[in-house]
Image 1 (spheres, rainbow, N blue to C red):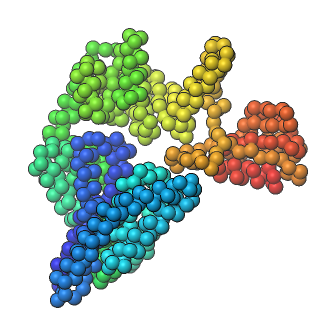
Image 2 (cartoon, rainbow, N blue to C red):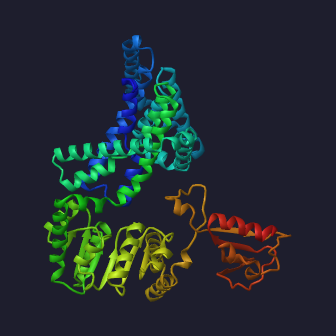
Image 3 (tube, one colour):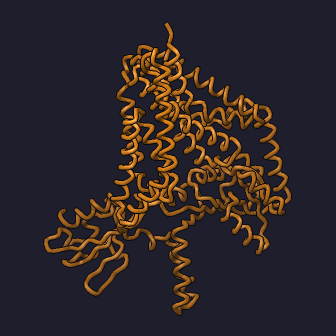
Length: 550
């Protein structure tokens, strides 16, 4: 019998949304945010997020009696306008002042609770005004983003973000009846494929109409073709407003989830798909490789610099001072344009692609340096180097030591962790200033590097330490364990206790006035010893229990 226009509007709005969380993350991982299609995609995603606001207002308003629709819609729009005016004009000043008062208490727990209070409070206020809870939470995020505490809020809510996102999808999954979905598999496939194909064609066509290159238009269409998490929010709201039958709602939810699940696979294959569909893209790719090849034809025994950001440019200047020739590859078209105009040997290209490395003369190169701290791209480059020139020395930059072993196993000759190297430079300056002979300082730094920075691994964490990433939070750290009377470890050695099986090593042993760095495995622990353990937080917990109670 078909659906009414109200249901059609709600379903259309839900399916029109794309997944900001998935697409932006993948563009960041593929280093494509600054590409033409990356900028188009982010612009559309931001507009879609803003378009959620009127949909969250309109859907509850149209759910009532058709005879009162004009009145209900007018009242909803008036209330929404009043709420938006109050929040966006007065809310910014109030929010900034309130957050300043809370921040002056210097309590992280209070700050986090305040963020939750503001979010839930605004959601409650919008519900009192006859609007949706989701709209209030969305507006709270917008207001917080306008304060100077935005970055601190982002950091503090990281532990909650993944949990709440997981709970959201768990809630959506609980609404699915697999028996209903299984009985209408073909309909679910149709609801997945047809909207995705239509959105792809529409977005790619509009992008091309506004002057984008064919390859850019196709990539933009592929990025925005799927449905998104805001679509699920709108669909659940539609079901709660009784605009959509529960059984059909489950089919649409299943279709949205399928399209989101397929997105990573589609985007990872986007380059191949675009090259297959667009002859113009083949020409542009060939021209790009031709430019790289022309730049590299006249040189040999050169250094390939992958990434021409600040680190790459500083490396290039030092190589130039020594008369060592180099070719730099960078995927940022604007950076390449201005650097090439200045006469520097830099060309546009993604070093994570094997054909780009071949065109850059990897077979004739003397070394390759990865200057960006992107482990995934670095691993792809190492994979290509292994197949194209396995004896080529490769130096890889990384943020810390969390991926160091993985990069070394993948074939990196040297891995340079930024945090360790900055500590070494600071220490070398301090030692020289304190009168330590320069030769001894150089020897100590060389010994630390030869030992793969083992002396610098781990540190004591405090309450004020902020982990920059999940990897850092789970990375090795130090912990002191005092062997009080009755501790099981007294009279035993690290080897007997099999600490290494826990993934833990003894970094230092303090015995009264004696301090032993990296003591031997056969040393026997005594009562009163302070054992400094090195390992991940989970491993340290298990090892401490072993030392104290067995």
